[in-house]
Image (spheres, one colour):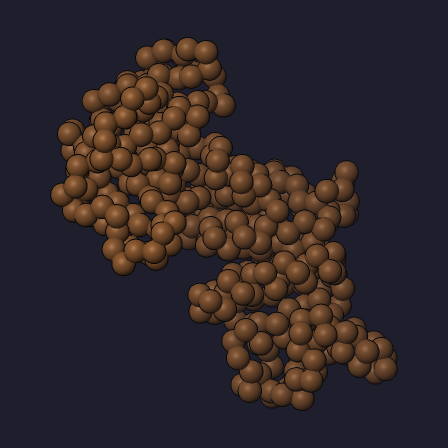
Amino acid sequence: MAARPIVTFDNVTKRFGDFVAVDALTLDIFAREFFALLGGSGSGKSTLLRMLAGLEQPDTGRILIDGVDVTHMPPYERPVNLMFQSYALFPHLSVDENVAFGLRQQGMAKAQRVARVAEMLKLVQLDGLGTRRPDQLSGGQRQRVALARALAREPKILLLDEPLGALDRKLREQTQFELMNVQRRVGTTFVVVTHDQDEAMTMAGRVAVMDAGRIVQVATPAALYEFPATRHVATFIGDANQFLGRVAAVVNGTVEVASPELGVTLRATTRDAVAIGDEVAVAVRPEKIDVSEQPPSGADNSLRGEVVQTAYLGDISLYHVRTATGAIVRVQETHTERSSDPHYQIGDALHLVWPAASALVLRA
């Protein structure tokens, strides 16, 4: 990342009546990043993107692009381009004409225009389709035409608002990698808004998780998954069992938490300072829990329960295991051998085991 951010939100707030869509938010995005704004409905992510595009004005705070204050600059003067989920292609124009539209508005000479359109269509692997109309293309091809048109004017920043939402699952997964490849080749800063955690985790180098108009955590996908800063991030990114309790001891960096929910003392790690008596949650991912029909020995954490629900998903099986206290623990098992059914069935008695290093203490 560059020493100076290409985008800065400086204490930005945006209200719609009494509703605070973005709340005193500060964020830096750097040149050549593929950056994702991730959050649920109403978290403020789309409002933030629209303010960067100039379609909304902040009530307070500043927005800088490459060091220039653009807070009150109209959209057409900003070095950004916005690509919508609907793609917004002109149905009566050919692919070539759609891609060239912004260049024509810009006053680019015809010869340059033709060369630029050809370059963009080659970039998105649509060579030879320039004479087709949008209704003669597949959903993935229309998405790539919209991408070519957005990149044709060489914006410093490309904004993508739920860009893959209209595609089916397989095409969406394929297009994620295509977008990543294009971004690497052109070097443009991409800022994508999505509610899909898999999409954000696949494409972005850094992800900002938003909730109630604020950024809860900004980190790489791996850091968000392995070291969530809050309970919200732990559940929004992937899946996590969370057990409430109070800190009973801190021994050699391992936190012991008395969990009334499970009737046992759990052992976990923490990145935050905690004190005896603090109310916390212990988070552990389902895939980090080992299952066995035999009782364990010397485990940091051990529970016994009965399988009450199973789901076979091909590469993995999911189990809901009910403990003696009635708590449900979600467990995931990876299939390394061919099988037509889950390894364990409803009613099976299992021992659940995981090391302290696989669990994380979070503020309750």
